[in-house]
Image (tube, rainbow, N blue to C red; front, side, top):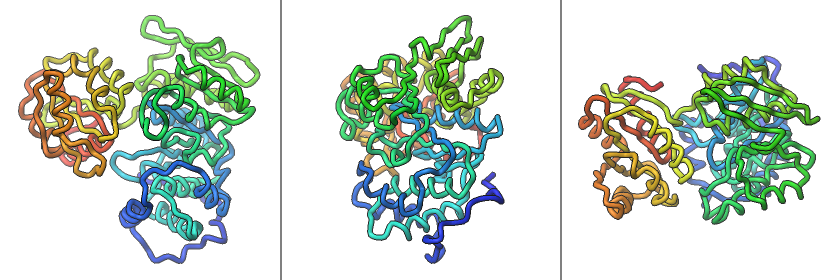
Length: 445
């Protein structure tokens, strides 16, 4: 189901009426992938110039920006769920996508259709002139343009990489969220949690709340936030804390006047707890404190594709998870230990710029049968041979496959009763598995 545009939407900016010939979304995406010499080029100057030409810096009445090494998408999904349930008009921008580009830009809980995304792309193309934009920057501007055509109450923007120099950060957040701080994208953000955290703290604004779900936030990050003048709500402190008991959770949040909002006996969320409680605290800071009923519903109903997602394929049980950095792999290992199964098979594919040794380390004692695969659609993919060599160094027997689909079909043929397969690693890995499962229509929950 795709979006039906509201009747009272704003009219397109007069300077960007589309005169380009009709281009399909697939053609646009292919063009954007080839055009810019670098897939990632951090910096705000170029994207800010285009945004100012189109007046895109305030795409909604209220802006919530979400950064973090892991848990960003989960936080956005929970924010969206709670806001929609209370009748708020919401736009969400996330990345990357799993199946279709349309997933990245949603309004009123529905992805934009191809025609509207193409219209947004055409407007950005006309406005940019000779300014070169990366694939992500172009898409970010298109999302802001689409949001600006609506009368949105809230826009939720997921940071793509880091924070300070990410294209999303051209927009001033009324509430900023950092879900977690850990090692990933070190070549861009720095080699330690302190440096990475300071980059993420770049989304904070003076006099505005910043919610952080990382209870072990480095001191340098807190110093950075103090220098900026942000109002910090740190998980584990008096104004933002949770307590577990008997399979439930009590949550204490605080508003901008330091008045506490208590949520008693909440069910444990399906998505990561830190992301879930950050979403609640962010809404309290935004002056949109959800009811306990709304929070309970969001915690038990909100799911996100590729996040410990259960599926069935030819009678076999499968878990799909986009764990592609060490912290996410540790969380995945913890969850897998709680599963009931006879043997655990693992199918793994990941990009070459990841810390592969540290991703596989926490899963070595958990996975019984290792399989690795090539990622043909990912230009930066690690080869199955390279991953296999790392596993060999740990004394692990491993089987290599030419693709995710090949690996999945092979493993399903080997699995017995009560066995479990986890397909994990890159978004490319999970996306290819989901495509095969969707084609077979055996069941993805």
